Image (cartoon, rainbow, N blue to C red; front, side, top):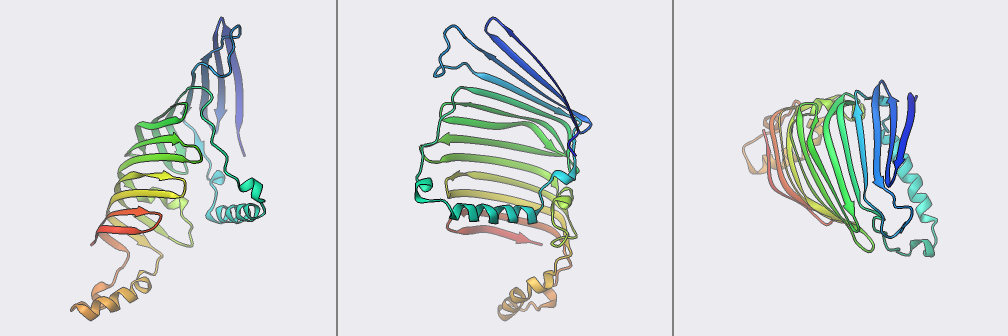
Length: 273
């Protein structure tokens, strides 16, 4: 259930508008503050002043019951596809995307925000005007792992072009167990560091990925069955036997260096020990 208690305050002095929405949410606080200037005497909807929005989140614990399961996502996707198939040709005609009606400066902070066991601290900023948006993380941490994220968005006539850059250092994979279906994994462990760069534009995308997982372990997967074909092929060309390639789910290091786009996946380096 959503436990929410809110208080709304505001002021409008001369041209300065300020609105504060103070929420007691899931044993924590979520405070939204909006500031802008309104020139009512010379109001021009085509020349609006910047809107500054601050969202402060602290000591919030988001219940796991709110997290959508994989099965629910699949059901929603199937329903969406059915509805899409029913659209007529007029609905399928492309329409130009609108630009931002006014400049936006958005700043959100996370202080001890618990999302199903993963605790977030740090902040995100979003700045935008016209046909451009820029998102950037500031000292954002998930548990003890530092996350750097930046996304530059360009609003084109009929699509968005997003340039993405992201890194994560020493992320504890065991924190993700609650997000993974129990039918697929019993547990997953290890420390992961990764770097991702690339772009998405409509259905096109291209990403370069470098990732490393150390001291890892995956259980409740029949690895032996998955690698039987590989073991047979390797045995044909080397002195290794199927027993040499047996795997109990534990590994010291997994490294992947590759490039991915909508047409192909290319691995430049793959190390598994």
